[in-house]
Length: 425
Ligand code: AMP
Ligand code: GLY
Image 1 (cartoon, helix red, strand yellow):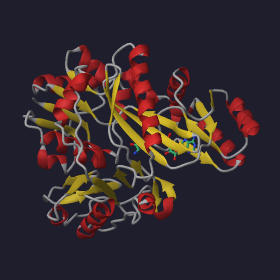
Image 2 (tube, helix red, strand yellow):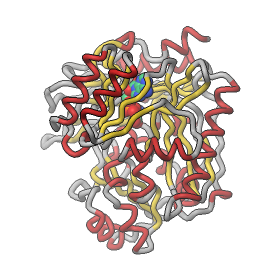
Image 3 (cartoon, protein in one colour):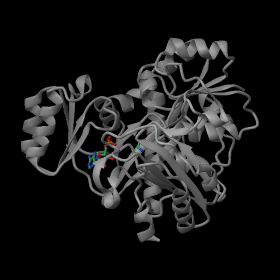
Image 4 (tube, rainbow, N blue to C red):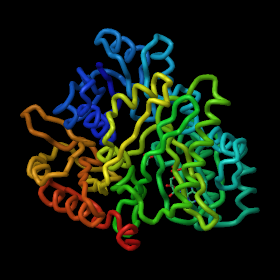
């Protein structure tokens, strides 16, 4: 079969890499793709992944049998709806299902209706009501812009003053339309854990739990980023917590079938906090996590193309998941200055040497091949260096050894990915 993957980050390189291993895949296209996907697939860099009509034209003219949607923006924009209406199989929910990620209010109401544990909250488009709620509840408290804000719309406020400022900034338009409604919620405590599940026809097939590292610097200091590293599985998760998260994902999948107009077919990503009262949901996303995918998919031994096709065609009973009995760690190599401003166009060396270590996969996030044929940096997060090992320590040591072999001017990375797992083991 021919497959088109939409997106161009490390997640999409990992998805494309896993699809490439499938004997049932003929042509693989990625739009827009990056310097890494160009090595294993055909980049359709001129195709606008958020334009449903253009994606449909491409799919029809290239004999595409399955479209896999990586990022949230095309999902929320309804690209899956356009493709499905024309009879093209799609991995990724339609616009209504994607509202679980596109609107925090929609998501919270979904959780409340279905008894899915989450933080107490107020959703409002009335600025004064938000300020009053903060005064009534006190700090710490969390303020979120309702809509998509590229991961920047959440403030965990330590003081009521900070919370009031966050509300004012939303209503002053810091996030445009995404901040016209705010969610103010109870601050939960505990380690975070991501649980990704394949969902189709109301059934959930959970992948192994993983843990992201969102802050820029060691010790979880510094500004929030798109994610600086991840590992899977997560040893701090107890059997009871794992069972609770799996039950919550199954209940949510069943609710998508009973509530939504169309079947939810894709990944549902539960962002959990392991609180003293048990796992509670911080959010749902309508897609694979980035960089969680870069540690989850390398452990998958099943044929991803067949899994995705079964999900896309509403055949959940055909989803078979086998996992390698290995640990996976990924370390993000970023450009100096990220998540603030940074320079691009730095020549990257050493990827082949890193991969020659064995059990190392270097997924590209922000790279491209320049006019001179050199692989250069083109984004804030540049590479995701993933390693597998039979112990956590082995995977982590291998990932960091591989990072040492790769170089570009201004390379920065966290040196403590997986520190919670290390402490627990
Ligand atoms: P989100 O964009 O919803 O994933 O939120 C970004 C980050 O903010 C999460 O990964 C958490 O670290 C933090 N966060 C979100 N909601 C809460 C909450 N209710 N309590 C504590 N921290 C939160
Ligand atoms: N790793 C966080 C996310 O994908 O939203």
